[in-house]
Image (cartoon, rainbow, N blue to C red; front, side):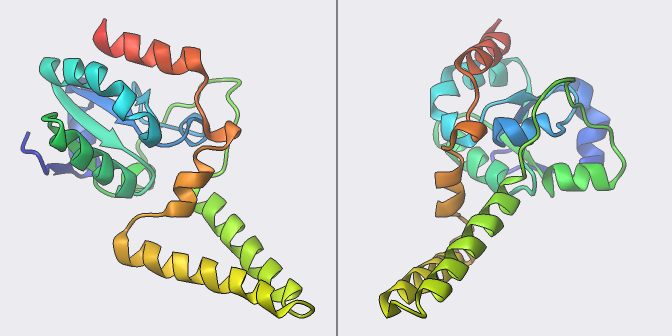
Length: 188
């Protein structure tokens, strides 16, 4: 695979048996449904997983997956900077499920909202808070302006600072044993 490879959901489905799939969404998002056989390494834990990912890439092709393709593309760029070649799934799990391909959801796993939904809730709540509080305290309107500016910056740069912050919340973090088990599976 070339460093900037992207696979469509159909291409990935046809090659799923020969790919090592890494899902870079939060554990809650991963638990809500992921590609069969996918390993969960949240984007903010990618650097810690580099040795395991290097070993997995030496054995075969890596496919990096997220909900829409944005985080997986970011992960592929970071991996390429470390000499690890990986492909991204165009359109992410959204495109995968839209085509009717199966996802796996382990029994008993908790389901967290998708990160974009968490961002919309947090941004909307902060904007409304700034507007309501701004009726009594005009400086509170700056909160709304700051969040709106952050959303514009997010769209222009295709990054999201709020998502990076929300990903650090406890419900979006993997358990230490879960991440350790994933890394061991990739190197074993």
